[in-house]
Length: 292
Ligand code: MN
Image 1 (cartoon, rainbow, N blue to C red):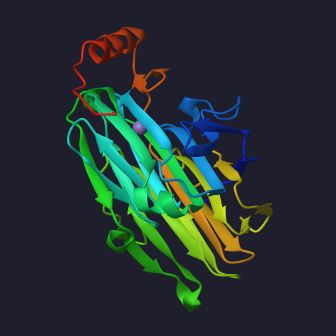
Image 2: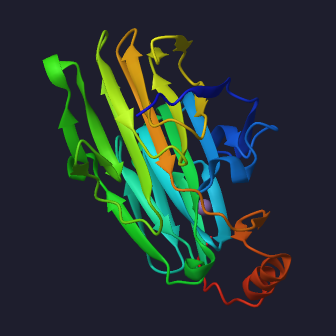
């Protein structure tokens, strides 16, 4: 086994707004270091770093929009999000919870701050990932997986230095509840000051960290601050993180999907023809109906 080294540490890109409810740093697709193919199957990562929203009787968010060809994974660290879709799915994503939505063949979707939360306002912090689907699964049926923090796999670290919360894949043989179409590891490392955790993923997997809280030392050499993204090389298997203060780190590692990506707006397909078809199907009402 050999060490997995850091490729680059990426500072949060300038923010942009998704609707009026999500103030995000778009890490993927990013600059030349992070095109969609570089972190596949994670083809988009929007990160709403801690931001205080004032109280609002009208929940902020983003109205009806389509998706086809991939999955959206929403992780709520602070605040609550309410989703609805044309498939009758939806629900509230509470603090610490995850919603894994398979858009696949196509859905209409809207996502807002949860009503009661919005009335009070508060600190909001969230990650939304787009997980690509291989060509064979792009037109499969839409579905939802609502994953509460209680349902996640939990691995206590030695010496009470924190715990690993497994959303998908596994850590020390403890599996996360999410079912995935391709091999994916997704977990939150909750480390107390001075705590450390070792990770081991196949060398070819696309692997990265996002520091949600605190600051960490990676491989005993590189210090990484809150809101920064760590991209690893595609060689070596093992890396270590150590917490300089109480920290939370999102850990992502997935088997690359070696297929062409044709992406435009809310569609991620393999070819331009499939993108055109997605727009035609959307415009002719084949994605169903969802009230605004
Ligand atoms: Mn959406």
